[in-house]
Image (cartoon, rainbow, N blue to C red; front, side, top):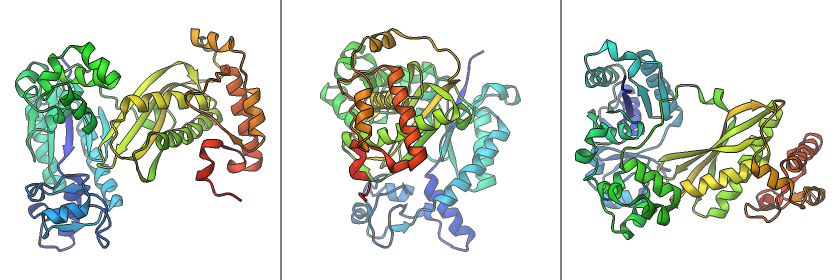
Length: 429
């Protein structure tokens, strides 16, 4: 039985939800019908556009651009301050309704999710009729509209929901990609950011079809693993399934919204290091080892991407998690400004259970370098580390180091000992 997947996406979510709140408060003007945006500090008129109305889009206003630029394009633009508490409330109401229709829901962000249509297929004449029912009920119940993309692949359903808006249902089955997707510019391909678009243009690749028909090895040689992923998406290759399990049940994670947008890789690495430390510490406290690590990036445009990898052996060691996170980041980041970074562990196993050694572990054991030098450095109150450090202590010694750090922090406080690369981020006493 063929799996059918829906991607359900709220049209201009922030703006729609803010518009509804204003109408409920007695406002006679619907923000969705005039040039308007949500974003930034409205009083000081700085920040970026988080959402825009269709009339604003006609002025060339784009999500993620500075508000001051948007005002130059449309001086009569109406500005609305974001209300994230409201957005989470509206999101929760929507997801509760969609779950009542079909429990197989995977929430992708505050305003979009995947739904596995397969369990409810006998209740409807067709996937399109089911999507129309959902679309109409959302509009009737909540007052805002959604686009629904339908496909046999998750990535294609996501692409389909981005076709003509608002309040539409579109299909993009695997057999339709040549007709519906290949003529589109590569900038329309899911996960293809500005730097990836430029790299493809440098190769003479302008459309998704041209990317799909280019030799895979050529793309790999220029764009590494991220290029391979784009090539696969262009060809409709995606074996991922809708995962309805709650995120917290699958692992331990942490994320942070950065005080300012980050465009420097070294700054991102520092953030990943702190997050790796936090996640590893929580894993050790829970007596768990992580078999998989994922990294999430939210850009200044509020576009969110993530990538994951299976570890060679389950671990709760800070340095191992950090190295995996940096590798994932390098494969994922397309050099756009970063607003949020997150790390999540998954495939957890009890640390008391025996784990199989890999050849990598055996090579580490033969390394004469030890964690003793790192532990000595820790007594000064700072540890210097690098993703590319030539020192490769064994997993056991790295674990012993983490255990020592845990003891020191529990006894003297979290800031009693910190990593050297993070020192400037902590106030000196």
